[in-house]
Image (cartoon, rainbow, N blue to C red; front, top):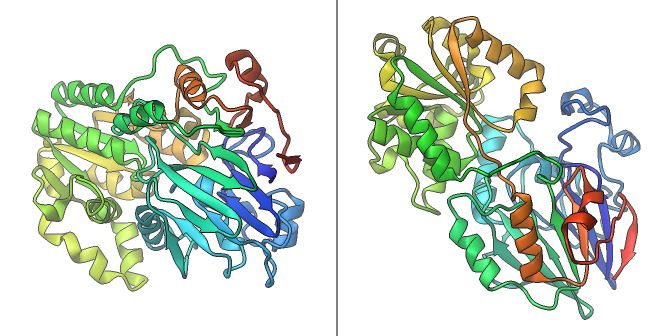
Length: 432
């Protein structure tokens, strides 16, 4: 088996792995970078008009042989979860390459195409199921369900030609699926030749990782002590976080307000897990119809989807008259509606990775609230395993070798882990 990490050996995000056994070739993830080479936030709009060859030459697209041509030799692409740094460039691949994906992840991507103007259409998806083996060419693959901030996240055991490789994907142990992680540690895959393991938090100064239960309690204290509006700036796809916010709202007797996108995400995913869903009778929930995205969706022909939740509509006057009753999910695209409410004090709770604060739109958005006497509060925990969890994970699997990926600090692996470490560079071929 030959292994090539086309991107991810020296950065967090943009993950892309290729495996070859005999005539069979598969890809694990095909993500968009998070940062430019200068360390600034990656903005794909600067490159979206370039062709494939130019994007490859600028190292935006991974240099994967035959991946983009009409007669592709790639037998399959496997997507680990619904974060853009793991799937965001897949629309450049040849459309005939089979895509293996979790069904819930595919539902998220379909909604993203509509609401977020993405282009990740999968014409003929192949759905895998947790812990059930499937075959691509010479490869036998077993998906393992992960605790991660993405709803439907997986790691993979990959077997071919007598070798066993395990790809961790992104994972943690402190989310709402911590029992899934515990079960994995108690029943890890055996006799692994190579563990490709993420190390997002390696090098970060984290004293103690908060759990999602901790986050819920912090939201509760914030909501209970608030006499005005609470806006929460977070990712709509961070379902664990939405559940934490909703539970805190119930305990604080507040109404949790999402936009149309959030309403659709929660409703669609509620068929896969017990989640707060507006149409399934969950109390203290409502939908605010932000003007710009709502008008765009109607113009794009999605009027039926927009008005699916009108029975739970929260009006602007409702919020203006009793702002302390509401907790609203917000994004920078909603700025005009939030300005029109003209609420001059309250809380803006930032609940995402701090690195996003460097983006110009995010800075501008936060400054709007600073200038209106809002208190800016950080309530967040990582979607990734802390160092102690990474060590526990590696010791449970006890592979013959660990290869770093999804990290800015691969040289620290030798100091942290007792297993043999192989530091690869992007595009370096390793023969197992």
